[in-house]
Amino acid sequence: MHADRIQDAPPSAPHDAPAWDRAGFEAQLRARGRSYHIHHPFNVMLNSGQAQPAQIRGWVANRFYYQIAIPIKDAAVLSNCPDPAVRRGWVQRILDHDGFELGGLRDAGGLEAWLRLAEAVGLARAEVLDLRHVVPAVRFAVDAYVNFARRAPWQEAVCSSLTELFAPEIHRQRLATWPAHYGWIEPAGLDYFRNRVGQARRDVEQGLAITLDHFTTRAQQERALEVLQFKLDILWAMNDAMATRYGVTTP
Image (cartoon, rainbow, N blue to C red; front, side):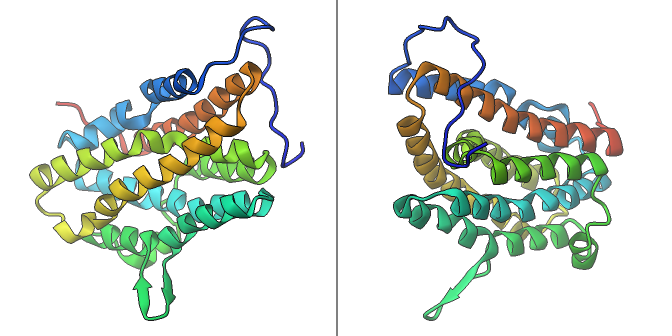
């Protein structure tokens, strides 16, 4: 597979079906939000106040494996993308997660914010960093996503990031419900979610523009929907794995 050539999807619509216009294609992408893990029973449990501390800690520890994979995925996009303008915009995602220090400006980054969340829920930093709590199925799903980003055309890797279309709402839910239900969590530990509300909106603008610009035939647009569904399935599978390991508490 060439890293600069968009693949056509296997035909799921008539061969001569016309391409959607930009608004129609965007609507198709946004409609995939019905599969976002905001609807998964494990996430519903977390955000409705039903989770026990051990379940919250398990989620935080396992999601850290996904968090550390995000800048690696983004570096794969950069390495496969020949367009300097895209690379200049995309590199900000790595800085957002890894942090930076330049000319007196310093940002500890999202990974550090996640470690502070881990400490706020009662985990030791060392036990999160050494990945001892990561469920094998979570590791498998995350690794599959990173490998996809490395091997796929860069435009498809960009498209896979469009689960960010739905991310601001899940972060807003956490910010609204966690302080009410889990008063034992230090409020400063939720800074990662606060930061990502704005960052995700900015990232969506870039990723969506690239996807709308590059997936222009109906076959390519169908392929983009497949790629987005693949990423949604990755996130859902992670929640399946955590639900199996930690259980789902219901009212």
